Length: 467
Image (spheres, rainbow, N blue to C red):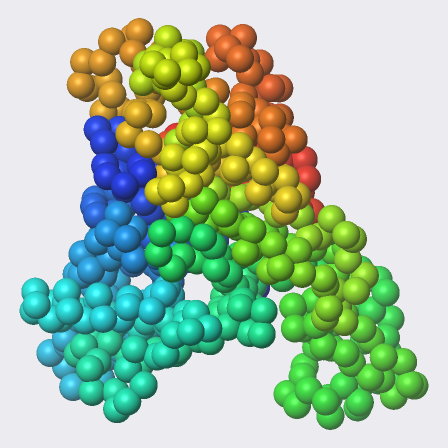
């Protein structure tokens, strides 16, 4: 069945290390009832247990996508797997003679080395999971599988995974197919960081337009077609029931008079597309994947806008904020040249040297993929969340919170200017409800939720609400 609701919940938005108001990297992508994770930094499971994440059930986590193997993106994964196994909804040994079906494994995708990380951690801690897991490693062109010999290294809770090699363009297409993803496929591309790193494209299959029963019912109810239909569909009692097959399974039904009932056409606007990136100073490796032409026969009638990206999540670790960041004050000058020590160029160079981006880099990428919404993630500890519950508990002054709020607003404005998207207003107090509805660039906060509306419900807008 097509997916109706798509919501992203940010569980950790800090760069490198946690702060009082931000945990390290993780987010949850909720597709109706199922949950997919992207990264799992330390304490991800604690975020999921928080009342602000009441809409997310750990037992519903089906897939985890790891962008790279830095500690702030994976250290929470073993504990998360253990807690999922210990939680409700996982079958337990029965006292009866009935054989309990083994639960479906959690599927984990990521770079080479992810299998070994989990095997060593789970083995040394003597952790056995009641819900198994499987790791699919995405291999770069110069990498060999981590265990291409006999599969003797499997952890007792592990199922054998795939070694996924890239295509001739260095891309990992359909590591999760539309059928496997229940209407969403997942592909990946390399992005530049200090280690091997991945960006993921989550792509919804084009949704068929609503079927018009009046076009089909005269043929399905025609007695002359009864024998043809029953021979094609043994056990068919009511030919009208084939309407759902035409809509959902998209089958063609030939009739006795030579007429062929075809499924309704696909919505020309295409399905939703989300680009979720790991740490990067240059994500242009995603462009061949995101901007690839529509080649499938059923995609030929789609509008060019079908290639737009509904949501980009891009890091913005560092920003040039000379009026707000004391460490970048224009009063700090080079003793020889008397020029300011800090500039947009110097901050960009510093971020790049550590494998990270500025708001301008994020905005430029968003523009290049025709993003409709942009969320800036992986923020330096210099940019706390002024509206986090933890900030109010710690006795932070109103003046400090106001400064933090203006920092985040300026970061979003810088990215919005580069992306060509509506950003936040200059003053929260003057922001109207209409301006909030029109805003398309946000700085991420822990527990923030962003809804990605269906393209055939264009009247709805994304929300940046607190969970």
